[in-house]
Amino acid sequence: MDASSVSEKDRKRREFILNGKPLAVVLSISLPLILLGAFSYLSSIIDTVVVAKSDNDALSSVVMISQIKNLFTALGSGFATGGSIIVSRLIGRGEYDKAKQTANSVITIFFVGAIVLVSLFLPISKGVLHLAGMTEEMAANGLGYFRIQIVSIGVSMFNSVFLGLEKARGATMNIMFVNIMSMSLKLTFTIVFVTVLKLGTTMIAASTLLADISVTVYAVINLARKNFLFHFSLKKTGFKKDFIATLCSLSIPVFLGKFVFSMGKVIVNKLAMGYGPDAPGALGVSNNISGSVTNITNCTEDSESSIESYNLSAKHYSRMIRIFFCTLALNLIISAIGVTILTVFKDGITMFFADDNPDKAALIGKIFGYEKIGIVALAVNAAVNGLIYGIGWTKLSMICNLSRLFVFRIPSMLIMINCFPSMGAESLGIAMLVSNMGIGLMSVVIGTVCLVKIKHHKTKDNVRI
Image 1 (tube, rainbow, N blue to C red):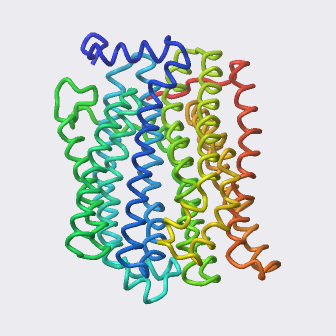
Image 2 (spheres, rainbow, N blue to C red):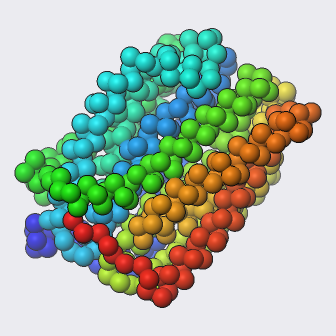
């Protein structure tokens, strides 16, 4: 596939990313993902509220299962990032035929991988819940929900890889529309199944699965189109040693970082159970409240990494630095506005999530009072992660995630539990604060080192397929 056979829209998008005004490029590529992040957050909040109102006893089970699900989706997310970096570099160099071959190969790998994962974990789903620290009652409440989520994990892994490829070519507007369509379907199914028909919280997972399948259908339709940049053809797949080595070297650190961090959240929830069965739910709600901001700023990681990858391939080093600072400024503005709004309306928000239960609202408020302080630090971390992914230093992102968990979060939680037991569940909020501020400071150091390397042209496009 030479450049002449590539659509005019794809060629213009590449030219814009490489030569357009940095702020305009960042806003154009990032805003659709930011809007998607806001809509995605709203969808997750509706799930939480529906669960709490339909079966409050199931809330902690659903929160803990969501963290277990993140362990598995980290695999799709990690390889989606690695594949996206490779494809972005190839498109940036104008090597469209290699970009298509890479895309087809990654899609094939994860189509097969998704089937294998579902086949392996469905039979042992109850054991997984017990291993995560859930009581017999909680596991019984969440087993049906979790089994459906396992199938959804397989589907969403495939979707993650496809959407990662769309991000690689800068088609973030398409991603926004298809995901909003998917989440709208999920919301509709959830309301009908749970609120109207009273079929129970298991049907929330069924709604998620149906919504994920809608994205898969969209992906398959596009992959079948001959004029689509990544039109799927088995003849265009290739599994050469260089390709596999490059994909794994970029993807595995991202996967391991996300996987271990998600596993750490399961450990944190297990520790939180020591404060009573309501504590994991309160911590999860606090995470959801702060997620109204962090989910949005995290969306800039993918857009920034694609933009940086394009420009690295073209050796636009000074432009890469400007792209980073534009992304950082955008994240800081969003986080500052978000923290202000959450602070002003804190009491009303916590009472809403507690379903007007003053005791639960107080518990959530205590945890969130600490957690919100670290939101700005996480905005800095997101901008630095985008830079790290863009230049292909994914091992650094793994180190950040591992440090956030094993250096900052779990040790601080263990100290609070053993040394200050009288503080109760409030300790969870302090652990979140220490973790988030710690990773923010670490990101500043790593980001500074990366920028110095870029300034002195010590980063290279070493992707060879």
